[in-house]
Length: 111
Image 1: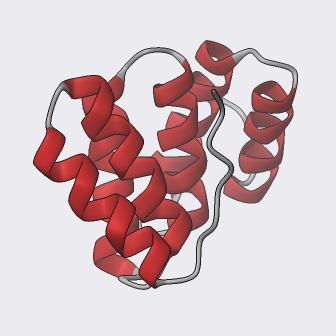
Image 2: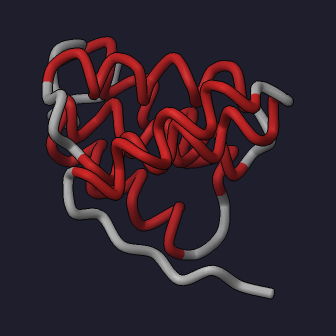
């Protein structure tokens, strides 16, 4: 059994995300979530890993959790909006893009 702490697992998962290995990141971050399920930084990173792996429903669940804990987290609203787009839920996407902007998260629109 691994003796890695949730923090160490989070850091390793973020390294996998940065190196564009979201599936490996998800495996590591799921272990971190099992250790500390209420830690929003782990849940947000896991949401990013799921999103980048094409697992949009699971990603949306993680971002919903983060928003429940921190309703003014503009980045989490933005990520949930992106999930809404991928899932074909226009209402979810519009609602959370508006909330992301209202809470000060700015993003660049790529053409």
